[in-house]
Length: 300
Image (cartoon, rainbow, N blue to C red; front, side):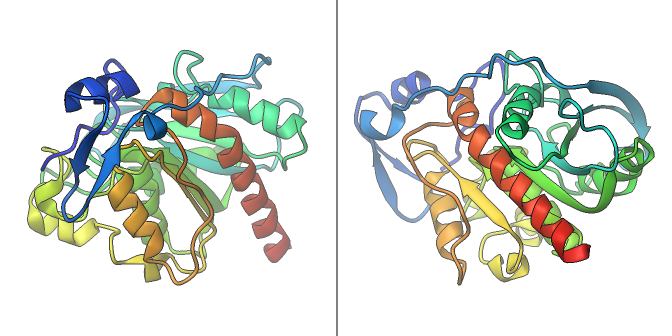
């Protein structure tokens, strides 16, 4: 069974749309082996609100990416107020149908404002950066488009030139970008990754379950899937959050349960939508702040 695409901004998989698609208030959604009941008790949850605070400094631009076959890739960096120099950085990977602007748009996630609120609340300061990854699912594709290489070989040097520390980075993402953050963490290794925080990661148990276009073929899925490869993330500071009404809930639960030491995170009420991601944003950013601080203490 193919799941809905991983989070286009114009038509997010909201609680209402998921219920309508299922055709009932209570239904059964199967995602490969196993199923779970979907009802209002798991779909409903309070929507998170972007904090009403002045954002810190946000700058952006674009570059022609060799790794993405010459495509123009927009990027943005957000700093918390009063903290501009020598900060660590978390790279935020967007969902399918989104772009680099989605992370900081007040109409979408508004993560720059959540960052301000976190730092004002005592979290260790760090910067956030986002970049366009297209709909490639953040890994090398058969046509040569390689968004993962773009992040590593092009974005990180750009961030370093802007004064950010990139020897150990944070990784974050939602939906397609949640998978991308996990994939990049495996690619870089825990020596380069301070921490990873993902929301509603687009995970599937098998290639037959995947949404069209997420992978080139079954071999591509087998090559980059994070399922049953939890050992490669062992020792990485990791947080995974997913709503119990999310289409990716079953696979994400299996992924989390596959670790010898369970990562941080929770499965609470919520669907695959912006309201849930905004609700999780404060906890995710505090986790990343603590991960960066811990990594700094180790390298000091």
